[in-house]
Amino acid sequence: MGFTEKKFLSLSPLNRTKKFAFALREFLYGREELKYIEDLLLWYNACLSPEEQISCPENKTQWQILSQKLLQQIGEDYDYIDDKLFDSEINCSGKGVILLDNLRAPYNVGGILRSAEAFNAESVALCGITPTLNNAKVKRASMNVPIKTVYFDNSLEAVKSFKSKGFTIIAIEKCTGSIDISAVKELPDVEKRVLVLGNEEFGVSQEILEVSDLIIHIPLTGSKNSLNVCTAAGIAMYALLK
Image (spheres, rainbow, N blue to C red):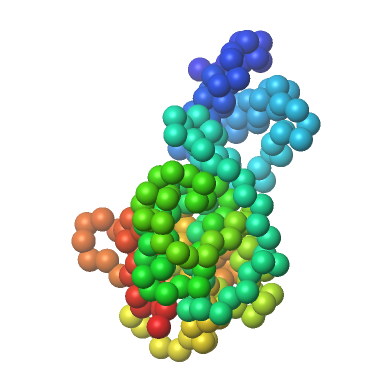
């Protein structure tokens, strides 16, 4: 049952965030109306300063990312820090780049950093809500491997930046038109490859898939049609960073 504006505004700041986050999850699962979610966003913004206010998402992917960002905020271990590193700092000279599109779990990020170093990737681009090395769980899972990381506010803008520098964007996602990883024959120089791995629940965003040069999937034969993103990352790096 929906809250009234008066009841919502009477909540503590943390409980307002919880209410909004959980209602948004219900909307994403088809159990809540968009109009109610838009009302909650309006009320939520009324409690924020102008610079903190959230623009109304334009599509389902943006609502999904907002949902996970809110859930991170209310998590007991939330310590995401917005490290503003800019694409002008990227000077790739190693074996390709791993780009993480709004990953949520610190242990997945840490595990991917560890694998990226093991496969001699040049750097890892952490995008959107992806936790950075300021997160203790990321550091623990990565075992403090010496690999360069760079942060982008927006995954799509990061991908476009790499494309403008002549990189080939390779999204790891099973979807219509994706290619079996074992069937990939010709790729550009490894130094010019960007492997994109997506959010644990929603995968690589549709906007990034639309601008990717290749979409590659890992064939599975078991009853589960998906892999943990950290596992998928290791397989993709082994196959595509050589």
